[in-house]
Length: 319
Image (cartoon, rainbow, N blue to C red; front, side):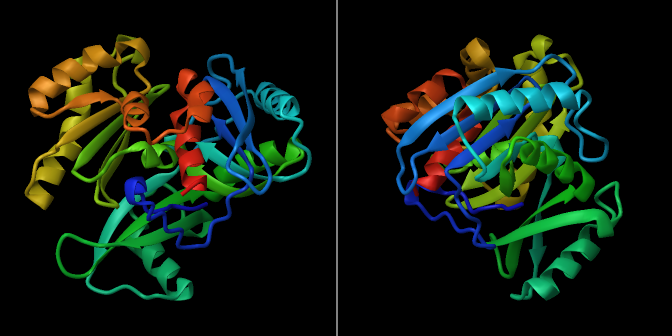
């Protein structure tokens, strides 16, 4: 499992744990399984496949089993991988955001060695996750803080939940080498030269992240209180307000841009209201990245299917 430093405009992707970049990536979402393959030794997209899932087959959770219907999900993954004619090879798994908890922690000083860092992080976060530290996978990266000291972006996941997804991939003949939450994978789409808020809805989960000049300044994943289909711009504003207020208080500056994902053909409706309320530009994440020329033309099929996590991972591969 890994986290990387975003800031794709300057291509400063920095994997603390030397994360590999396999030619195959697979996103498992509540509504689908999607797989993408690149040509060996190159950056060219070779093909992609999307297989739908019935409602309730995948129920994202950091604590409980995610695969409510493992047979159906396994079949969907095998079909997607089969359409790409991908044999036994390494794969990057992009998982639903609720599976992986993300924290930004501040320290006056922080050890360089992983052997010292991981126990410190486990101790720091032992009361922040609803499972024992011994069954927790931890990954982290350094980033520049607003003031003195060091900020550590830390991701945690329950080992047995990650193992569910790994076994799913292994059942399709794959070797999982990277595990990442899907919104973190999508962040390379963001132009973060100024403070930008990303709000992404997938299933019943809303993930809000604030990025600025290569740093993740805030991250929050919540369960929507209303049915996603009945989500209104006001509901969304209420959900993103806590992180917005935190950033404004902590960083003493305003949000300068808002990018939206997962809202389909309603994105412009939400953008108009958010733009008025937050007094900054707002619009669809993929559309803005395309218009800015950050997404290669060969990724257009992924854009058309609104697969922003896989498009973001593709940009990370080509950084």
